[in-house]
Length: 218
Length: 293
Image (cartoon, rainbow over all chains, first blue to last red):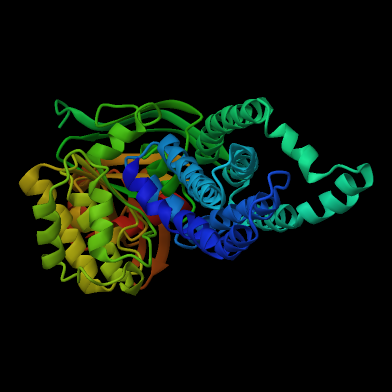
């Protein structure tokens, strides 16, 4: 599986690394102004950028489709399950790189747990949700093929990347929900439960994706 | 041949698509032989080959490839089979060397020495990107990949389609050498009957999803002949069994599939010069089977 993961790694490594590089100015801003324990500003800006991982997924699948990667792999003694696992593993690695990078950056801003824990938790939860969404999109690819389903990844990518703005304007602001109230969720045990649920969902969706790929091969 | 173990066996295999059905085909290939699967375009050759490689799932019937059911043991089957498809797929932006290295990781018996020597023999540059390879080079490279893990069986789907005569001949000679010298079994599908004629020991004709004829090639060519005859030189019982009947300057002609049975009755006509017997090739047999009378 490592050989396959290595083959699939290019976009899944490139995107999160580029994201972290582009996120650094924000990191420096928070560092200079000093962290506000009641604000998640740094995390709030960094976390939604994780949706760019869907871009890595789209780029990877487009390259595979162009190169007839699935057709090539099919003639080799590789179980389709291994292909799916390798792709899901790389997706996980991409999200993990970004999340870990963000958490390290938060620690550089402040090691105060009041700031560090909710900020990190915020990005972790975002990462876990991103994995579930990506897994659902993979189900679509394995069921319909990239040539038919690829456009939906792009649509999801754009919609989710821009979603924080309408969420703020249309949902949070009219209800008077502030950042500090959002932070409360990330101080309690709920974010751990939510993340665990998402990761379990991701694992189950991977199993389902294996089934879909087998069906498609049939 | 009957006592030889079968390296490949299909029994009553069915697969249906919209407008096409593989209709209960049965086939067997004894170890060490080359089987040519002949049929017109759309007859079901590629579907049959893909079923052997578990790239298409059969709906019913039994399939054994190297003693295993590919549906249940796809990975093990692919490990023991060298496959060359109609189209050659590689990661185009990767080099020949990278591709060989990548592929090698998935085979239990990969032999780097064989792979390297085949690349040298085929004059394939290791540093070239696979998208830069010509059609002929891609086929040679695929063949190098297919042969480098000591396969017991080679499954080739139209391997020579689109190749120039020099490379075509080279590929066929290599397959023949592998079969004769190393006892490898080969199943090769083609609508180019010359290729099959050149290397196959056994032939199977697949027409409209059905195996209509299987035989040893030499036996087939001894049974099938074209008979030219002057009017009245052949009895109506024989004339009625001829296919592809034509009238021409010499008289009439037709193709028979029972030459060995009727040959004695033709001797007198041949001596008198009113009957001539001519060999047919696999093309003639295929056309007779497809078009009949």
